[in-house]
Structures are given as C-alpha cells and as structure tokens.
Amino acid sequence: MSVDTTAHSGAHTIGPAIQEARVSSATDPWGRVDEDGTVYVRTADGERVVGSWQAGAPDEALGYFRRKYDALVTEIGLLEQRVRTTDLQPQQAQQSIAKLREQVTEAHAVGDLDALARRLDGLDGLVGKRREEVKAQREHARSEAREVKERIVAEAERIAAEETHWKNGGERLRELVEEWKAAERVDRPTETSLWKRLSTARNAFTKRRKAYFSTLDDQREDARREKERLVSEAETLSRSTDWGETAAAYRDLMRRWKLAGRASRETEDELWARFKGAQDVFFQARSAVFAERDAEFQGNAEEKERILAEAEKLLPITDVRAARQALRGIQERWEAAGMVPREMRDRLEGRLRKVEETVRTAEESEWRRTNPEARARAEATVNQLRSSIEQLEKRLEKARASGRDKDVRDAEEALDARRAWLSEAERTLAEFS
Image (cartoon, rainbow, N blue to C red; front, side, top):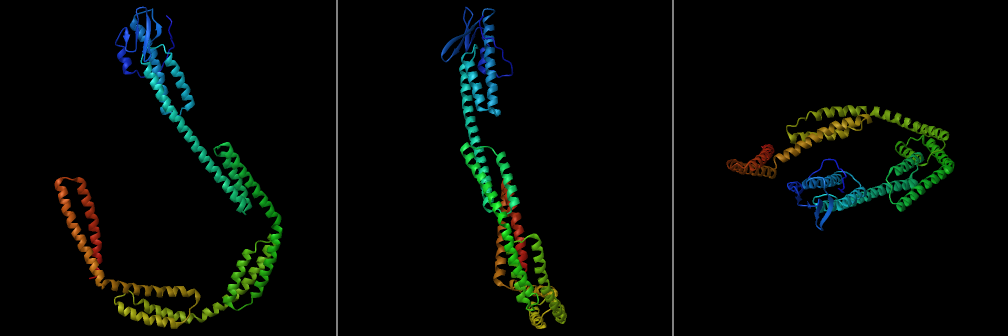
C-alpha cells in the first residue's frame, strides 16, 4: 500500500465526531473505503483519496487513517495550549500554524479536516491578537525607555546649567550615563538626539567646571579683601557699649561674611580667628554688664516669687468672680515689681500665665454653664436623640418579628451609635445643672 505512515506520539483529545465514527467498520462520517481498498476522506470540497489499504479489513484501514487524524488533533491541541498559556513568540507560532495547515491540507487521514482548518483559523486570530499585544508592549517599553532617557537628559542639562558642587555634579553625571546604558533602547532617531543632548550637557558641565576653577583664585582674592574689611569693622566695634545696636551690627557683619565667599584655607582661618576674637571681646563685655544688672534684679525676682505663691493659692478655683478680682490685683503688683534676671524670666512668667489661663478657662466654663441658649440646644439634642432611639427600638422589634436579619443588624448598629451620642449629650446637659 502507498500511504503516509508518519507516527505521532503524545496525549491528545479525540473529538465526539471521531469517537462516533469508530462505531462503523467500513464507513465513517468523514471517510470510507471502497471495494478496491482506496481510502477517501470527506471535506467541504468533496472527497479526496488519502491512500489505499490492501493488507486487511476496511475497518482496520479506517482505524489507521483515523489515528493519523488523531495525531493531527494532538499537534493542533498542543499548539493551541502553547499559544494560550505561554509566551510563544507570534512569528514562531505563525510558522507552526503554517506548517500544520499544510499538513492538514495534504493529510492522509480520515476525520473532520475542515474542523481542524477552522481551529487553525482560530489560532491565526489568537496569534494576530498576540502580535498586536507584543507590538503594544514593545511600544510601551519604548515609551517608558524614552521617558527614562528624557529624564536622564533633563537632569544632566540641569546639572550642566545649575550645579556648583563640582564633585557631586561630576559623580551624578557618571551615574546618569550608567543609567542610560542600563535602560532599554528606543528608536534610532530619538536615541541619537537624546544621546547628543546628554553628551552636550556633560561637555558643558566640564567647561563650566574648568572655567570656575580657572577664576577661583580671583574670587578668593576678592573674598580676602572683603573679609579684611569686615574684620576691621568687627575690631572697631569690639569696644562699643551700645549693646543692642552693636549686637545687631555684628549680626549684619556675619551675614556679609557668609556672602563674601571663601578665601584660601590659610587666609580664611586667620581672618576668621580675628573676626571671632573681636566678637568675643564685645559679647563677653556685654555678658559681664548683663550679669551685674541681673544681680540687681534678684530682689525683684524674690518679690515675684512671693506674688506667685499668692497667685497659685487661687487654684483650684471655686469662686470664679473672686478669683478674677484677686488676680487683677496680683497682676498690678507683678508689673510694679519690675524686671528679673534673664535666666529666671521665662520660668516666672510661665507660672503666672498658668494661673491666668486657669482663671480664664474657669470664666469661660462658667459662662457656658449659665448660657440659656446653650442649655436649650443641649436639651433639644438630648430629646431628639431619645426620640430617635425610641423609633429605632420599634424598627428593631419589627425586624426581629419578621426575621429580617440584615434590618436587625442595621437597627442594632444605629441604636449603638445613637445611645453613645445620647450618653455624651446627657453629660453635656449635666454641666448646665
């Protein structure tokens, strides 16, 4: 006999039509064996010869050619699985489909070959969709890569135009070049254009850094001359006894010192030592005067300690009006007592403020407690919540009686919330009692 005898192996699914066809011994829904042993397959285009069988019974011939068909079913099923569940490349999948389509077209097999062709058509559609997805993914990756490289270029251009910390700037530019190399490639024109901008930015930074260091000596000389003048002014002011105005002048000198830039390291250290020495002379003299003055204020501090002891006896407040009246007299005596040493000022004034705040809080509480409008609002809130709770309790009883579990849960949650609100509202109302 002259037939295609290629063997296929592997698990496969046999369609209902194939299973039904095997019931017949000499005929099949998709083929037949004629009297001289010629085997035919039926397709939409009519019958065609797939081989001949001379060695046995017709049903054995049909079984043989059905197995050939089953092998094709298996191959197509495996390809379908690969297309649907793996990242098989569209081009490779298309090649496999074309190969199987050729095998189906020329198949020496008995079965629904038209159905196999339709399955391959369906795979064509899936592969086409996959091709579009891959294309979209590729475009997305290129878009992301373009965004990454545009960001790299933008940062490089900013460094080239603005960065003055030369070491950090140079290191960052080198990092940006490495980031560029690690990023995905984009289309050639965009890649070339962006790389040109990155290279231009690096060159610009290098030129600006060289220009800076080439003029650094001139800048240091300018800074030296300016700081010489500042040191001279600071040394002139060091003997001043106009404490407030001179302290402000030293702050301005410090501001100008920072703006003047840096001289050479050796000169900078020498000038700073003179500048700081002049400041120290002034501020040490001022501290000595202030210390003497603080000693004179010690008596005032002792008087204020006594006033504070009297003020703190007002706490806790039981009679708001009497406390306010007593505090007024305390405040007048406090002002009359005069200044105290600087290191004691915040502590003493803080203690008095605590008493003043306590009295003020008590006054506000008393006003709220006796405010009829606020009491009326509190009573209205309590009454409204009680009414709402009564309605919800009725709703809960009805829901329980009718077995509506969701309505029961909703009513219970609402009741819990309103009972909590009522408790708070009742406490507020009690404050008016």
